[in-house]
Length: 88
Image (cartoon, rainbow, N blue to C red; front, side):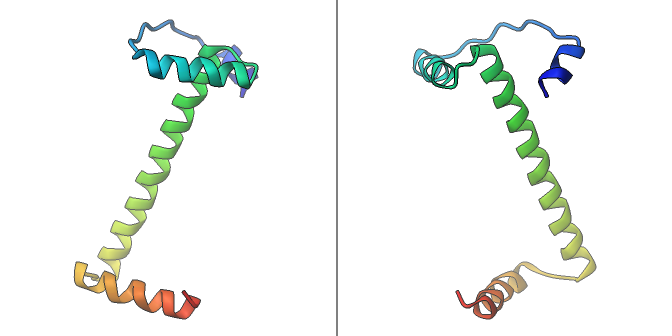
């Protein structure tokens, strides 16, 4: 990923952070022997990836509801049945 970052055009941005958040960022950056900027870049990449993953999950679920003609009242019993089958 680092090589990818070096080949991409970068921009400088100014953001406001409260002092507690900034101290936490700096503490983690020192602990991981990284620059503050790299820590923030990674956090942003992880946030975006997580959001995309959740969007994909919700889209899959919406498709399942539509193709299986499910209703909200079908969800609870389906979860309970699944858990019984899994031994939970």
